[in-house]
Image (cartoon, rainbow, N blue to C red):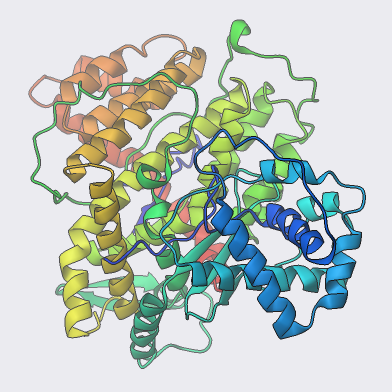
Length: 593
């Protein structure tokens, strides 16, 4: 199989690039950025629990509060169910002393303010399921009292240790609940529900997959030779035999996609994609081969004086000679942990207008968060890209929150380029799901494994279920075809790039390059060339300059062929670097659950 970059990085420039081109009720019980009904923020859970603890052990009349301004607030029924869960847990576990201990933590806190900490998200889930989930969370809270992790309301709000030993659990209904710290809301946790029947079906497919040989130990550099559609390919053993979080991916399902979860709110003006006069595809359209595309050049952007807000933090004090050592040390952690550490050590400490910090941020994204996955056929391509999105989604969400909470700056520009690429990735993952659905459904029906894909039965089931759920969600949102979905994604991507063209300097040139590539990928060659020609001048990135030279010097009859060759050349140079880096630091082994 051919190693292909998720977000290609040029080995000389180091720039970050876009992604390659490629029912029963909804099984989600989640807390998202706006809240939930039937699921709730973990830090807020502790507050609400204590309100009920007081109501059980003492007689307290809370002053009446005005109704919350949002319709997605927690309902009285949810509060009653939490009270029922507390009563049942007290009878089952004999928690009277723990109740008194919990009450003691509330002596100095203002109870009337507690309801304002809850925002709700309506989901179709039974009362019994809610009660069972509440009981599990309450039990974990009482365990935190025993461990001494939580001593006051403030401590509880900031605590992330209460569930550190158990990030998923099963309730009496057989449903599995997964906990995920929110990427955008400090101290909050998202909950996802995987229904019992889906979990049982997945378990059956996994048992069948486990009948196939899997080595206990995979040596460094070990290669697997595969026969794929009549030709042979070589892939790293640690990639081929990697373990995948099938249940977690299924639990998040359609909520992996911004089209369902909600696009990042960046305050950008709505951008129309009408200029893209793409051929009309059929309903639920098939797409062509997965392609690698490249944009930009990794020179330091030059912010315009009027767009450089004051930032009192110091400039980056890390010398460029030390960057590689720091980035290599981060590579020993999973990507999400890497970004948490990078934000803590650099983005929170240093000035976002500092050009060196912007370049270091770009290098970090390109070298550490960028990815390569191996693809050959629509099935492998679909699952690999879906899995990559699953691992990267928390990082993209955190970037979106940082962008929304910070004014324009060189560092913010780098995060916006990455966010635009993430939307491009989501769009292509949806295309890949559609392409692989028929085969995935057939594999599930006949239960025959694919010889060139390890754990292929489980992967087929995940692809089938997520595609069906995504299709149902898109219909609920009144999308008539995937073409409309793609236009929506393109609108958001173009909005980011067009916003970046207003920044001036190298940032403008890189954004024009990205815009032109988007048009080129969509078959609008003339519009792409016209866009690239706007980037001429002293701030023209080197790779855009290479394209402009072709446009000026080559005959019109051959210019498109030369541009294609140039783009392919640029991306081909990136793949080997990233491939070697991910093998060197055992990226796929680090993801082992």
